[in-house]
Image (cartoon, rainbow, N blue to C red; front, side, top):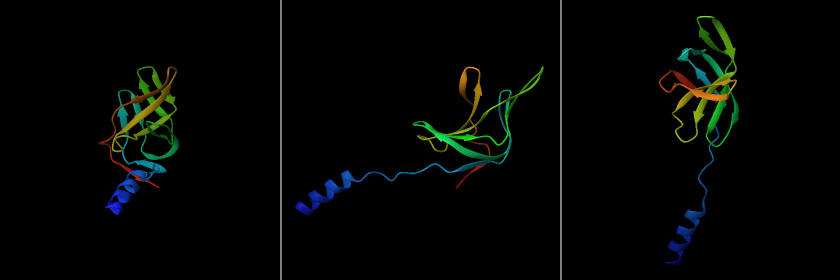
Length: 111
């Protein structure tokens, strides 16, 4: 009986495995959210926080309007809670803003 009790205590004390985010996300098709256009290509891991991982775009995110195009810094965001949820992000004057849902856009996670 003490063996079963010890096994239960040991099982509770074991931490879940730590998974690290992939180093790259390859966006295999262009994606857009409203007037913001995200180029296909290899997005490199830039930073992580408690919400997920941020991947920097290989080229500027282009915002198209009737007066022309504006380049912005940005990339892709992979949620930590729902690792299948892929969104875009762009840095505007108000700060970092998440845009769109790119989960259905063809992409691959790469190390």
